[in-house]
Structures are given as C-alpha cells and as structure tokens.
Amino acid sequence: MKYLNALNSCTVSNAKCICFDFLTPEQQELINQNSTDVRFKKGENICKHGTLSPHIIYLKSGLAKIFMEGLNESLILKIIPPGNLIGLTSLRDGNNRFHYSSMAYMDSEATLIDIDVFRKIINENAKFASSIIDILCENSLQTFGRFFCFTHKQLYGRLADILLCLSERIFKEDEFELNLSRKELAELTGMSTESVIRMLKKFKDDQIIQMEGKKIRITDAQLLKKISEYG
Image (cartoon, rainbow, N blue to C red; front, side, top):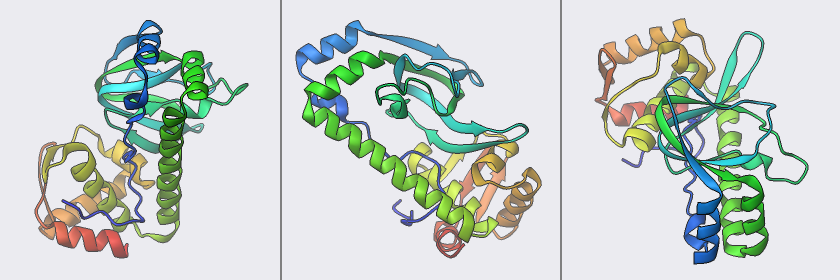
C-alpha cells in the first residue's frame, strides 16, 4: 500500500536502522559486552527529558512514542516502531542529556547500548557513522514535513495522515487494532480529543473507515489519501 504523500503529518518513524550491518565482528562483540536488554510495560517511561543519557536505546519489539511535555499538555513528535534508535540527539560530546521523553505505547523490549561505546564506533567506522547520519537526516525531514502540515492542513487531513501512517508503517494492513486512546490520537494530530472523536465518526459515516471497539478498517484508502493530500 504505497499511498503516503511526501508531505504529511505522520509521526511514525520511517527511518530504517541498518547501521549495525556495518559493524566488524570485533565491534559487534564490543556492543554485546556493553549493552543490556530491558523490558518496558505499557505506559512506562523509557527515557525522560533532561535526565542523563548513558545509553543509546534500540527498540527491539513493541511500540514507543517520543514526546515533549508542557505544564498541562504534551506533543508527540514521533512514534517509534521496532528497529529504531532512541537518544541519537545526545551523541554530541558534552550533550549527554535526553532532549525529549519516550514512553512505551505497549509492552516493549529495548537494548540499552553504552553511549561512549556507540561514540567510539562512530569515530572508527565510517559506514556506521554514515548510516547514523542518514537516520538523523530522515528524522529531520520527517519533522519538517510534520510541522509544515500542522500549519497548512485542516484537521481532517491530519487525521487522515495518521490513519494512513499507522496502517502503512506500523500494522501494514488495512485492518488493525488501535491500542491508542482518543486522547493519544489527539496528541498525535495536535488537536482536541473532541475533534478526533467527531472526525472519526465523520469518516465512519462517510464509509471511509469501519470501527468496532478498538478495531479500525480502512475501507476507502483512495479517498483517505485524497483527504491527506489536500488537507
């Protein structure tokens, strides 16, 4: 299903972490010796904005969100599916704090890699370093597109983006069980919970989607794509 347009407000990470494919056997062993696997329950913090970042976090399974918090509200910057890295913005020397928070959307497992070992391999392995740069660039481009659409798209377009992104990049099916609350969907789209509920009902009434409990099925992907493209 290739129906994602270039500029959308999707938060789902599209970066593919292939950096570990470029490690030498010695570097792979070094990472193995300086990493540990940790399980996170749904709703548990993976990292917290402003705290020390001794590790780069590789999400092995589950689903996580990256977000910024205010006094009363939070904005989700990105959804992280398995195979992605968390904490790359802390790699610069002297910049050893997390610049955002992360929380498990569902039960998840992650590998915590010592950040000094990660930096050492970047300095030694040009292909590994180049792959990390590619990930950072992809993340930046996605963020640019997301916030451009936040200022140019109407609410229907934003919701269409998220539904398509979840279907395409997370569940890879037209029908999926959405374990996110309406409030979490609102945080994803930068709108109120009431607006999300109203627009989901509109999409259902227009037979663009079907909803039964937490299950959502996209029944008219082409129309949803048009709503996404034209906002």
